[in-house]
Amino acid sequence: MPRLELLTPEETASADRAAVALGRPVAGLMENAGRAVARAIRARMRPCRTLVLCGPGNNGGDGYVTARHLSAAGWPVWLAALAPPRGPAAEAASRWRGLRAPFTPDSAARADLVVDAVFGAGLTRDLDPDLADVLRAARRVVAVDVPSGLDGATGAVRGFAALADLTVTFFRLKPGHLLLPGRLLCGETVLADIGLPDAALPAGLRTWRNHPSLWKLPVPDPAGHKYSRGHVTVLGGASMTGAARLAAAAARRAGAGMVTIAAAGSVDIYRAGEPGLIVDERPIEALLTDPRRNAWVCGPGLGPAAADAVLPPLLAAGRLVVVDADALTICAGTPERLRGAAVLTPHEGEFARLFGPPGTDRLASVRAASLRTGAVVLLKGADTIVAAPDGRAVVNDTAPPWLATAGAGDVLAGVIAALLAQGMPAWEAACAGAWLHGRAAALCGPGLIAEDLSGWLAAAVAEAASRAGQEADHSCGGYH
Figure 1 (spheres, rainbow, N blue to C red):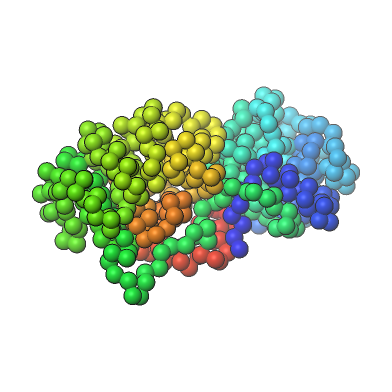
Figure 2 (spheres, one colour; figure 1 turned 135 degrees about the horizontal axis):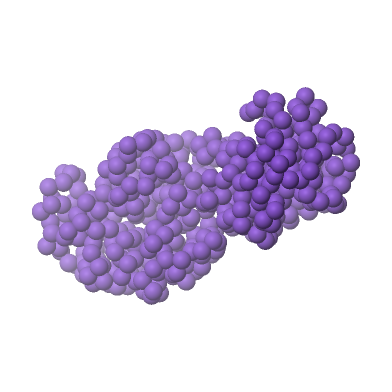
């Protein structure tokens, strides 16, 4: 199975302790880790003057082993120690017989390559300015675990972290490898197997990298009909009509059996659209009498006044509702008004108006927002986070930069509503929607506009089906 669990530094330390209890000594794991770093470097770079910076702990121990293996392969290697090694790292350090250099910016500047094995993800304070100066002087960096100064749990920078060309980590990724700015600072990230058994994983893990093996897309019943595939109703506004049309098109492409735009008094522009789209101008109270309308999209292009009028009765009716855009804006500072919604899809600005700025620990903030509202919360961005009220969360990294275009969020709301309509639970539907949305954009390629996305959803769905239950294709997000 794909190695999708994202471990915090504390959970990683727990796994290390469990591995020792299972008969995998630290010295052996350290040897495997350093060998893996050296192998990854040699596979990507030619021999060059290399300085390995080693801290006093296990991350530094990995560095001593890396230096030894590179030197044995004929690389010119110097080693600089921040402080004397302790614990298992001392044994690894005792086997280094090569050249040493002072731990200074000048040493780093003279090297063609600097291996950062100082602290890794376990740092719990800001990086010391003197150490930052050493790393800042490096021209090319390979990081062991994470660049020193990068918080492995949040992806935030603690004072300073160097931009690495390559990061080699072990056993499982950490949230900081996927969350920004960490993902950008890690460069290419290699996930190496160093012999930790899966049995060492801590119990009660709650965070994963989003992948089709975490959820199951709806499969149409051969004996089914349009109503058995769900009926999505998109509430359409009078002015920004394109938003509702984008959401509706996406819902149709994502498999909903029927899609209606409900647009009282604003029907002409909608009826001029695709012939398969149903337009209904009856008031929401009349539409809610039909129980087959099981999933709704409320907010895109609706306008604040209309959203304020329709959201309360819609939530009170107990339907599956995806809330976005204007329907989020009207609840600024009062997120309790959103109780009863299935999925909330704010971007960072909308999230801040609802719950306050997410801060550096965005995972914790999205989890808290989900618990507060009782809804699944999807915080949109290049590192989209999806959290459920029970604490489950994924980080989605399928979105390419060109997905940042007007209307893309409306498409996402429509996809999620279609999956809800077909019977997917809310958290799974939001996770799948985020993954499909990003992959559709990636398959389309640069130059994408929001109207293009729906046409690529079928290809993304097919790819998800082929990946489900298989090993993750780590080349998609730069992970090997």
